[in-house]
Image 1 (tube, rainbow over the protein chains, first blue to last red):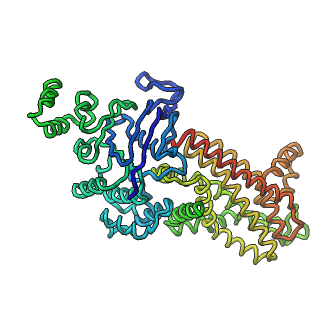
Image 2 (tube, rainbow over the protein chains, first blue to last red):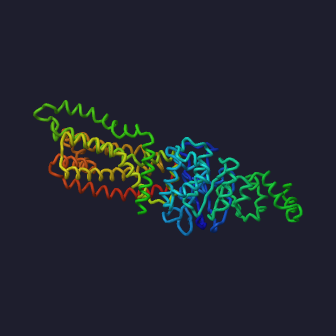
Image 3 (tube, rainbow over the protein chains, first blue to last red):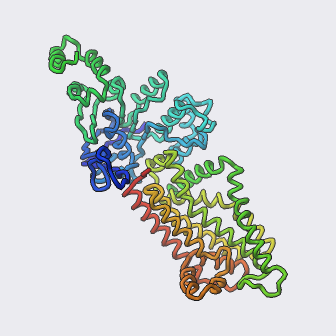
Length: 277
Length: 270
């Protein structure tokens, strides 16, 4: 597995076009830039090689937009994105393993043909062997030669997971990756992610995934980074209304109680201050 | 080597997806062009066959079948190559797999080459079928065959280059596609795939004066005219050949830049 890559976002802005309407009703108006509205505002992030970062925010906060922009799918309106010293949309850049919420696999060809296409495109050495290993890892040996259209949602997600790991990318972008997996495989996938040396950015709503897999948390709201903390300082995120909502207050309270024992005087003050108990 | 690997990977995947339903693939490649050709054959046969002097200038009872066979080859190839990117990009956009291609560190020229190569493979049955028909009716020599094939390849490059702009529009703004479709239809009608250019001069003079120069400027006309002359062993219009080559290669680089511009500015929308 390759060493992780550095990610630098510098004043990154991403715009989406506004829907074309002759007459806007009041509720349809969005603050825009001409005929576009800004989905991401001045994002400044530096992720060190091998770092694991959770990107958290409510639905529509801009997590997927950020990932799509890093992956090179959405061109920035302004600002820069560097991956291991290369611009994110340059062909010289290292491969980015982007696992979207919806599996990026071709349904009209077989699972094996999907993986072989990726292997050839990314010039994966000894790819036959690697595909075999990954197929076993994601437990798709029995159906790898079937058309993907015949797969269940979970099987497609597993194939997508294999697709992401195949080129050995230095940067992994995982957008709510465990939603379609069964409990056993979700745990297996987490173990795999724990063992990769790649830099990992993971969007999630599950505080347990944040705690288990990451060491840093970036909180996004309305397209802006509102908090960027190391996991030891997770309590900094807790008091904000957005942080509590984004992570799910019940889970969050539970994790706080578990992580900061009542003996810890600092934690007690946190409880008193924010009335989380 | 990198280009070749990327081109082959994309072409192979495209062909696997295109031939998922083999009957439909063969139907589109052979039966559909034959269906388009039959009414024309009937009209031409009725007008020309058995007459000592052809009422259609530039075509005789000996040459009208290879004339039409070459026309249908170029027409099919032009249609396929012009639509190759648009159809594939739209399909991938709706299936949301287009992202896969764009997150890969793949060169734009490789995408063009891969889709183009897949398009050529898709057109091979059409090409071989009508080639055999034309060879049976009006055999030609190896030089004629080779020159016609070079013209065919240049038309494919021209079609793919223009198709790439259509493909860029299909990704970025489908609002541009109807305007693009009118432009492509105009170009198709102003190419003598199924009629000799001489018949245009039979139109009212003011109309012929406008249309004939446009047809002469149309690189597709240059390709078809050159291929027919090579096949039928008429004097070769080298000017047409050079013009087609120059326009095709220029268009390839120009459309690559236009596609990159559209892609960088707008990304995938819709």
